[in-house]
Length: 104
View 1 (cartoon, rainbow, N blue to C red):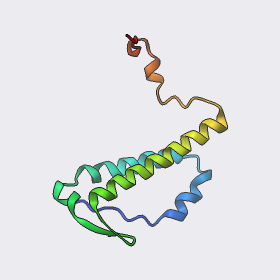
View 2: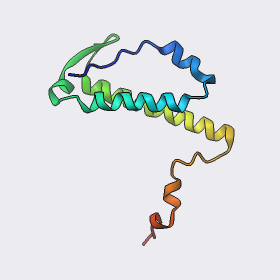
View 3: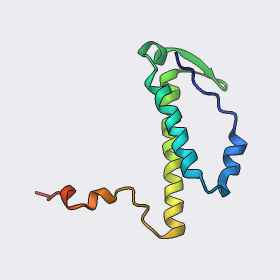
View 4: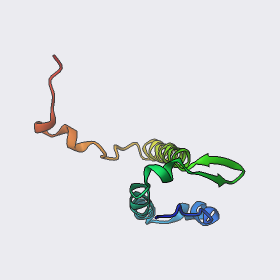
């Protein structure tokens, strides 16, 4: 059974602002989380655990972490677009001819 990782690197995560490999660190975090989440059984997802001062199910914890990660990722994307004025190219595949759709 996979265990949920403990988060204790908060200060070093925020200190990484000047790092040039933030995207690699972000990808590594996602790559580490995928097999852990994928291995959770329905029984494990229903288990209650203590996180900080809260008594939550593992499912609630997973949803919160995914939502929290998504929110901060959106903030990073917004700030990057604001500061650079550029398109980050996340959806460039949609501009390809084979992906264009006509609105009825």
